[in-house]
Image (cartoon, rainbow, N blue to C red; front, side, top):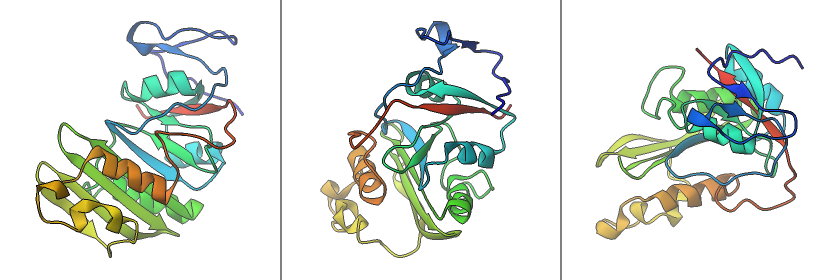
Length: 215
């Protein structure tokens, strides 16, 4: 596969390895093991092991190979990282993407719907404690089954019937202060619907994902 490098602000590491240098500018494609994530983050979970097809779906201006360590660092610096598959799932990690209430095609809800139309099953999760933003979306075969978002003390979106997995979240079963949403609620639901992102296990091998450039 031919990779077009449009990431002018980054430097490529040697084929062996290289540390992340100033401003997270070094990108390394040496395969490495998965890194845990989920806090202060937004991501899609796509039911596929075809990471290249996921990268093509995003229709960026260019893609470049990146391992977990440098791909995650770049994602938290404003980029989009497509991970190697984990237990049959490919993650699109983009902490600063448009949130669930955005009605455009780039909004999290609509993007999850489009991903599911191509891959059959796709989920979105958003998790920011500081702004109390907790959100998720479940889409199957091009249809949104469930979308919920909460931020700054109000419900942003509440679409579809409450799922069996959400019944395990206190927010939906109690009306007192102990029922407020938390980071752990999002992570619990992510594990129930897809696979854990904070305790990655299974038959995981070193891998390389992709960074996608949009500008």
